[in-house]
Amino acid sequence: MPIVQPTSRDPSPTTTTLGYALFATRWLQAPLYFGLVAAQGVYVYKFFNELWTLILRCVSGQATETYVMLAVLKLVDVVMIANLLIMVIVGGYETFVSRIGLQGHRDQPEWLSHVNSNVLKVKLATAIVGISSVHLLQMFVDVHHTPRHSLLWGTVIHMAFIASAAILAYMSGPMAAHAERGHQKTHREHAPEEPAEKVFVPAQAASREDEPSAEERLRAAGFPARKQLEDFDSEHPRSFDREIVARLGKLDFVATRRNVAFVGPPGTGKTHLAVGLGVRACQAGHSVLFATAAAWAARLAGARDAGRLTEELAALDDHAVLIVDEIGYTPFDAETTALFFQLVAHRYERASLIVTGDRPLGRWDEIFGGPSAPAMVDRLAHHAEVVRIDGDSYRMRRATSAWAD
Image (cartoon, rainbow, N blue to C red):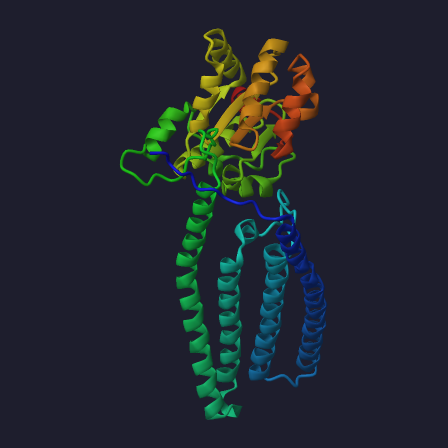
């Protein structure tokens, strides 16, 4: 008996055009967010106006302790409302109007990388609870001049805000899970019947008993020694961006499949930082593999000679982070450069690479020969955090100090 295959109809051009037109109306909200920016300017003026009044009364001796407390609480209230405004402006614009390209910016808020309507609602609710708390505290500080019914209703309204925020936070989890299931169902319905290409997903925290433990991941990573980011002597380098390393320590680059490059002279701690990030990734549930550039070249060349380079690159997909250490100390010919290009191209926007080298990426043509070197550097640097470390060799300083003693 023949099997009747379900058919799906593509949307008509009219429907598609109408949908795009309706979606384009989201730009009507853009002026609203610029209006909120103007409102934030009003609160800045109000803040300094209140601050100036407080200073004048304190200097003239007219400010009592109660007045100072109330004035400071009023300033805090203005700041919290301004914080609420910036959260609505940035988060709301990102969620409902257009993406804000802040990836890689050192001041990018943590919540902006995963903002959505549910997260935004919960954050707004908690901010409102904080503002309500300040208002209620102002009432209790000035309790002698506050009517009892105002205290009663202020407390009731504050408790209502707390209850609504708690309910909203409780409901946001199931709502997000339901949306994710709907997205997956839609993806399955529109997926082709033939086998799809394997898509790599970085390893996540262990959730099953058969998954390796953190200690097993650390042993399998092949680190030359276990280094911690906290043990790095950040005072030794003459030039070193501590903020970037602190942000990298949160491992957001693993989730976003970005690369990291530590560049600097020998002995400045590049390997220490790379291993420190790898150790932290292992502890967070990710699989990591460490080797020097020469060892990676030998491994890839062996796989190529055995006719299984494609299988080797696919097997490396099991590791969320690969660390390539000591780039620059050994020059590579065109064939080896082509192998590194295939490694970088295979993991491009799919998984993370951490590399350490003694010269900037723009000078890698001094290390890698052949026509594929520029393309390899282009893919590696496209989504990369480059940390420049400048200073004298830490090992030489230790050796010199020991000789002097």
